Image (cartoon, rainbow, N blue to C red; front, side, top):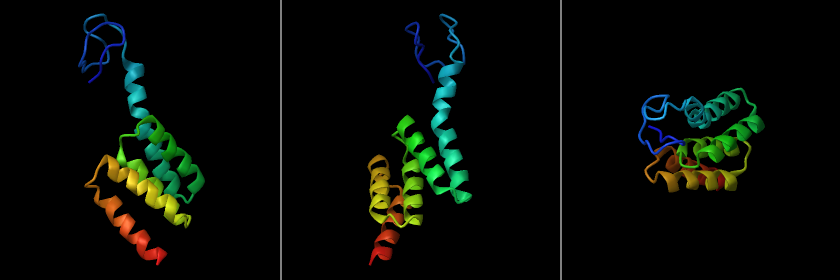
Length: 116
């Protein structure tokens, strides 16, 4: 659902505003960008390109700071780089967004075991 940036029409489900006929396709593409960067980060992480994955996850977060998944993924990269404090920080950020995130909870426990 989108709101038209030109007229007062809200909750539009189509790519064109039914009231003023404005093309909303660019807004729809912008909405997809965080997921695109997240997916690219996952692929890069799987390929072992950790610094590049960090860039993609960070971009996904900057475009949509309300999704927990990129924070968890970024934390996982930091664990792989032995940056445990940074990893815990990212997992905690994920838990601020979704306190029930089982991946973040488990990851924090795992990192604390590694640090002992």
